Length: 117
Length: 114
Image (cartoon, rainbow over all chains, first blue to last red; front, side, top):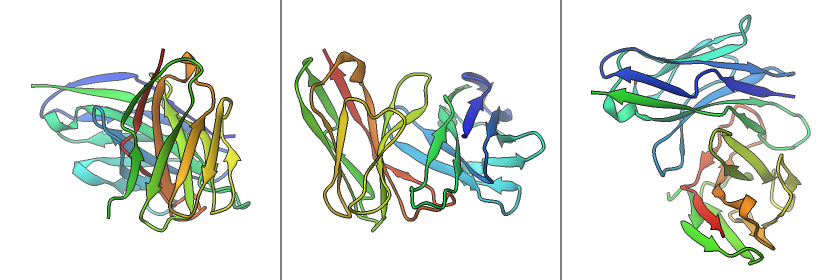
């Protein structure tokens, strides 16, 4: 079984300061990990993904995440927040099942990022 | 490419009414998915279709049925709507079954059951 825990339901930062959104996962297989962003009343957009290549993954809009197997973590960071980063962020885990079952995703509960001027 | 499209965008139903949510993708993806999103719970998988002609239950299938009409289209049906089905519904698709292939999401359908 796989699961994802996003450690903060809300994070508030000032514009121009660093962003840290925390995520821990568990998986019985070698997982793939994703971060998705959802702006208000919109669908989900992929920010970045880890698929067993480099452990430091760079995504869109200046975000990056580091896969740490020993800590079972995949925290999302950005050096300098922008007002347009205000959104909900989802950490997602997927494990490969060799039974043609499709790409099964498990979502964390989400972290709402607020950016103050 | 439109990506993943969903209709309708909004819907209000009375308890006991039925309706079908439509989803289509133009990316030639094999797999398609239906999720519901409730506050504080992320997205939960209702049903999925790993390939044309197959469908399987996800985490929360009760009260729903699906049809994979063809490779492009995957519909979700509520036969007798209940207030507990008030939610935002997302359709998604992915290229293959491997875990490295991310899912692409539609814009969602906001459903209210009174």
